[in-house]
Amino acid sequence: MHKTLTDALYSNCPIIYRNRDAADTENRTLMVWGFLCGSGWFDLLLNLSDSLEKNARRQQQMGIPESKLPMISQVKEKFGGLRVYMKNGSPELYALIEKAQHASTSICECCGDDGKMVVVDGCVMTRCNNHIGHVAN
Image 1 (tube, helix red, strand yellow):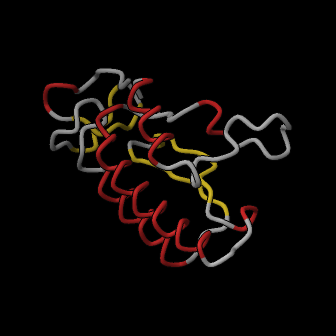
Image 2 (tube, helix red, strand yellow; image 1 turned 120 degrees about the vertical axis):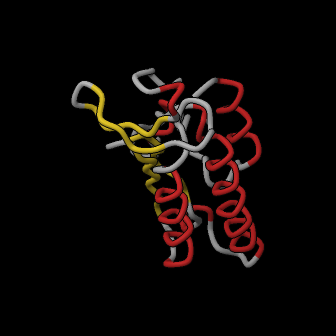
Image 3 (tube, helix red, strand yellow; image 1 turned 120 degrees about the horizontal axis):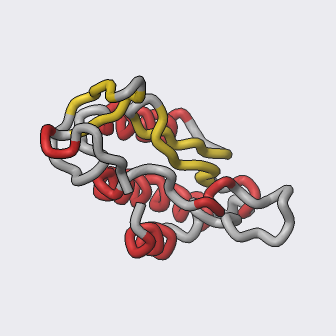
């Protein structure tokens, strides 16, 4: 995903994307590598992240300690679909993630237009007709 989009997600959702730059490797998440998917899924990730962040803010206001708040540990593409891994989630939050992951299989990872899962050279990807065979960024 483009750096400007990555920075926007980090800026809008500081609670769920915390610890990506933690000094100690024990607390650092795999988000240190950024979003390992194409920019076409940005809107999907923005909507999901906003929902998760609102929940985390409510928990924070209730006095839940930071170590127990929801935190995204990795976001990537796998087998043509979005994968989002979270710590300290609830069934409600995992359901939101599952819905977004399912939606990603019909959104082109390159541009965000309607897409479908295709296999190109043995790789499964979700692409529109214009981006079949393209590498997402």
